[in-house]
Length: 357
Image (cartoon, rainbow, N blue to C red; front, side, top):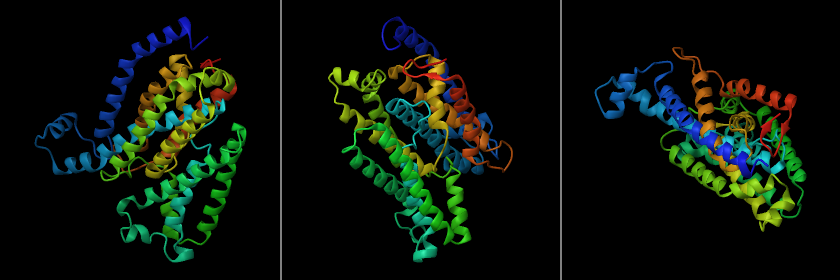
């Protein structure tokens, strides 16, 4: 078996061998994301900025006010989406499950739509942002409220219905209802509000400010901790619900823990960065292929690190170096994630063994 014996030992050895390479790649891409963009910052200038030396005022402004929060956001958001996808794929035993399958993203999008698009109906809408309601957190707060309401609905129904498939279908239906309401709001909105909402749906790591960053990082770190605490139950779930219960685990508690943790991370990322697709579905498979295991003791930290690497890569590509052109982040993540999904479908996944066969 993959979770016991020699295979697990071999996977752990491989993980520890690859760990310095992965961490080194992560640090390299993080620094690269700080110096490359429409205005390139020389490496020696980067060193002087970090150490407090003399550099151009423009470089200081770009580094501290733009690129540093953007790189930190990409690092944490990528890891959170990868972890959320891993939790959902294990929970539903479905290799094509992603962080947004519960409808959390749709709830967040609906919250943002009410803030941005309701001006045409209620004469309000973007008034929250314009008068400083909750400051620059207004859009994020609306998204978090929307995601929380969907989570509350799912928890209430899951308390009465034990079928995971029913929860899956419920999430899909919530997504349809939310999309329908957003479409109606769009019909009554002015052009500028529609443009703002459309831009938000493209996804971006660039919109998080220093004042927002502590909130986002704190919630995502909490999600990381919850995920680490769920490692043992997740490994048990690979062998089935009955096996987990035979090991003395409370399945309902595990179930709620997975749903809440996924909703926390996916909801927060959507709130601060917009709906970012494909990272959550693709990175867990990428990690299983790299480490050749389904052991969550390896996959959980692996997804955090590899998720950060892939997110930084997509952010670098979306900001075309040396130009003022910024490509939609979701377009780049789709170019990365879609081939992985196709690969999974065509080749199949021996789920529970973590080996792409």
